[in-house]
Structures are given as structure tokens and as C-alpha cells.
Length: 278
Ligand SMILES: [Mg+2]
Image 1 (cartoon, protein in one colour):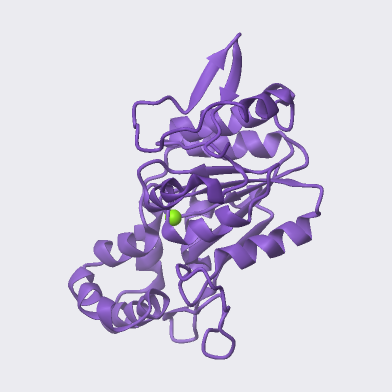
Image 2 (cartoon, rainbow, N blue to C red):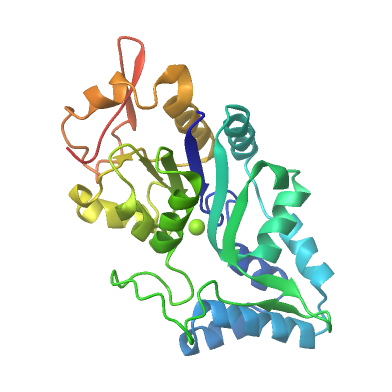
């Protein structure tokens, strides 16, 4: 898979939970979180919650201990290592924060597999309080994305454009994600790229509303095992960019609502990705 950039969302994609909720729940602050949720943007709320936890005597070490217990499917670990071994450039694009992500990746020995982590700043200040800041400083310079879905602190589509520019125009992109924020980048992928939405999650529902809006091939996945199989299939046997995918464009459109449809048909022993967009 040399020549490919694999961009992973983090929450509910690499780990199987939302790290923000995991920390808040794990440290007993769910009630306060839900009380404040309607009053401020999510990113601002997470910084506020870190202040609240600090005031309650919870240390950054306590936060890290909870993060280290977040569930991570062994198949996802295998998928990351396999992609890296095949020469892919792995990146993270997440609306969590750097402290949460690095803590979890380091705990599982995965930090070295990613060339870049694009996320909200997150670090411990001089008082031992965890500070979380927005990726885009939306007070000084709003990101201005017109899609109407991206949160004020991060337009993942714009970040993906920057990743593509830094990686080189000749690189193909495989993008994996589950959330509403992953929809904007999915619209910016090109015909040679691959979108891997988590089936049954918000980005999947958004894609299904009008699959023709996507240029990239769509390969849904449900769990770690299916993610691993799909990722490796896209790169296996020189299939990426090859005739298999070009032939697949002639397949009938995949009905997103039919959960029983296999994500991939096998014909003549060759994997054949179904293409949502004709
Ligand atoms: Mg996510």
C-alpha cells in the first residue's frame, strides 16, 4: 500500500468508545457534563470539565489511568501494524485531543505508527490541570466551512485538504471514521480514494442520504475485524488502483438501508468492492 495515506478518526474508530465520554463517565462527572452540554460547544465543554475534575482533586494521572482502560479491538491494532508494514503513511484526524490520543496510543505501543496526529491541543498546565483548546481558534478566525455540520473548533475536511497537500498529490487516501464530523472530509475525497464509514453510525447515515455526492469508493465496516479485513483487502494483491476497482464501478448502486447486503462481493476468487456511487 505504498503511495497511500490512511487517515483514521480516533473515537469509535480506533478505540471503540468516545474518549471524552469515557473520561467524564469514568471519573464520575457525567451529571455535570450533561448539565453543561446545552450551554457551550463540545470542545469548550471538555476544557471546562477538565477544570471541574481538577477542582474535585482528580489529577492528569487519574485521567490517563481511565484512558488506558478504554477498549481497543486487537483487530484494529493488527490493522494499524499491517498498514504500516505495507508502507502506508498513517495519520490521525480527530476531534478528541492530543493528551487523550497520545496516552492511549502510547499505552498500546502504537504511537510510532502514525506520522501525524491532527487534533485539538491538549496538555497539562503548570497547575496540573489538563487544558483542551480548539484546533481552529474559532473566536479569532472561524474555519468558514459552509457544509453546516462541522463543529466550530474543527473542520476535518479542511484538515484533510492540508494532509493531502503535505503528503503529495500522487497519494491516494483511505479515510476511516464514524461521526458527523467525518462527513465533510468524505465529500472531499476523489475518485481514486476510499471512504470507510462505520456502518450504522452517523457518517454512514449521512452518506446514505445521497451517496452520489461522494466521488470516492465507499467500503463500510462494522467492527475491528471487518475494518482489518477491508483495509488489507484494499491493498492486497496490488488491488488498489487496479482493474478490480474500475470494474466495480459498473455494479448497481448499493442500497445503504439493506443491512444484509455484504460489503464486498467475491467473484472469481477476487474481492470486488461494491461502489455506492455509480
Ligand atoms: Mg469518531
